[in-house]
Length: 128
Image (cartoon, one colour):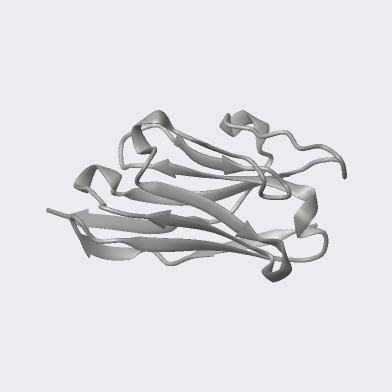
């Protein structure tokens, strides 16, 4: 069973950039479709971006297209979220989510209900 640890969060100013990492332990990282979600204080968890097991396809929340980029390096067992031009409304805990898929399944999942496995989250705080 793969377990993940998110890192890279922190306190930044509006307009800054951050790259979050989700590093997995265990085998067969490439058998997992993955995604980033976030949850701001007092708000529901929301979808940020998702990526297929091989990294060939990605999906983004409409409001974040152009500023956020999801990627993965299966040789390093790591998924990334590059966030540019950060805004105070991006302040949230960012979670890595993952689910196992079959070896030839190139599906992409955008609902949190599709992901049975989650990391502990990393806090991103953007000051104005």
